[in-house]
Image (cartoon, rainbow, N blue to C red; front, side):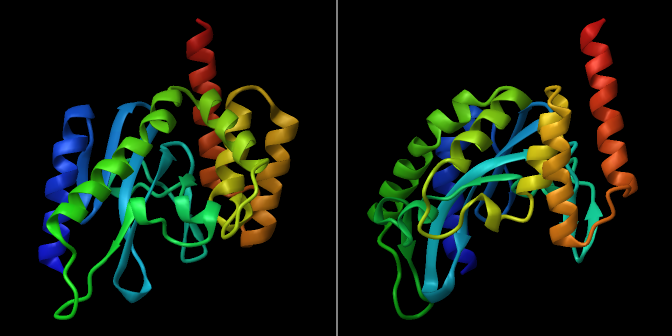
Length: 214
């Protein structure tokens, strides 16, 4: 599998390095050129030897749930998806154009097929990555995806949805709506609304807002 990861990353390097992405672990690449937003692209490993592309965004000020506790994730290596765009969610299975299968000693993905999949998957990210340049843009994507029909996971199935959406709403001045999302997140995950990391995120947002108003 290490050889496969190397092959995937070599193809991704050709497509993603020129636009500011860097590898942070096998099959995962991150760009942090628009603070506090980090763009993520990866080929996720799935059951049955399948690998499928997904992409999305991580926000530095949004804490992540790990082992029932909130943690910070302010570096490219520590990112997690706050907003995940996974083609599988829309059709229920891994689409051929952004996925492939390789099983050690049994089935090796053809090099030409791997190249086609990497090219198609990275090309599919262009519009999503190009349109997100601010926290307000992230809010827009959340609203749009909340109105979509999915065959696998919806926003509700992703742990980070409500804390990320809520804090982004606070950042753009929609406090009542943001608080509702934060409340939902805390209730679902057994997190105290007064957790220091949530308050720290709010303080960062208030400071940034004050600085932008100067």
